[in-house]
Image 1 (cartoon, helix red, strand yellow):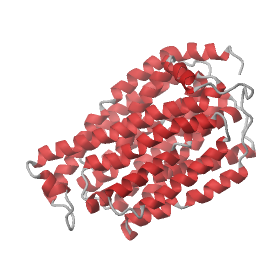
Image 2 (cartoon, one colour):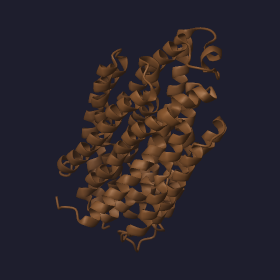
Image 3 (tube, rainbow, N blue to C red):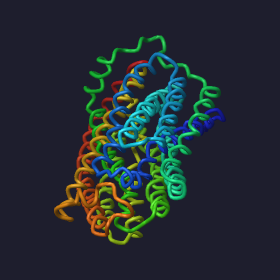
Image 4 (cartoon, helix red, strand yellow):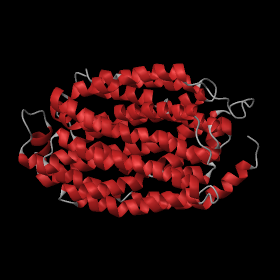
Length: 442
């Protein structure tokens, strides 16, 4: 593989840093969710709606029209504008006066972040040869892992010492500088097949819906996101409720079990895919199928543990496997469509992955957690444990909510069986689909 140039490394570094703050602003709600829940008297279902659906629906819905714009106008301009928008909305979250205000601000974060991934994936496809794309996006996606660590450690420390509102304000501000830096230093690459007219949305939708590999990759990634995002949103509350951690202790554990594992997994997965799947395209499906198969027992065993140390080690391994090939799959789906369809195809993939995984998954997990906790506590759970009350929750409430969340996560993990099956079907069809498209000139 040819080495990257200095300009290539700057591209990777800057977009990776923006992706880091993209993820910080997305996941900071996971860090401060428990103090917000207590201050506003929220149920886990309401927390799931705020942390998942409010973000995911707008992220997925707005992402498609923005991707259509990215087929026609400057993708660098779209990403720079989107970065500024989500940063401002994150800062506004810190001045929310009630649950509804915070819900609206999280919707705004989703609208802004919708303008990141599809244009970036399209930029990578036009700037780098196909044999480098999985590695490039995997390196950029390290920003997710670093963002998880910085958001957890920094956000946890700020929230512990200065309150959850300050965490939103501090974590949102750097994105404004990054947006300006992107606008000034990154040039729009020449589009492949630039003379061709971007096809209509209906044409792209027919194209991707007719691709068995695209559909099964998107469904499989949505299931992985359902489990991964659910863990991401509720891991810190689980540590606080079941093990009595404070925010700072929970944030450190989160950074080690989630952020470090996703960083290592994403890079390793991208390198493995570029090295071993370029000559046998079926492995683009077989590799994530294998990693999901390994993740399932690791995840279930981890959540079942009563010792947080054993849980942390097993969650590290499970998260490594879960996230190893998600960046790769995003780049592989670009090879299943024509060049002028890439940004829209990426948005459709992101819509399926985010809305199904983060949106539906967070609501299901929150609802299931409330139901199970209520059953464990008995009558009066909502009145005794959810309403706004001074001081920490009673021990019986903490025990019921912690065990209920644990059991809900166990139920969620079983969904990985669907991801394993989906990647198997993708492996069976992807080689023929890529070969058919490679016969067409770009």
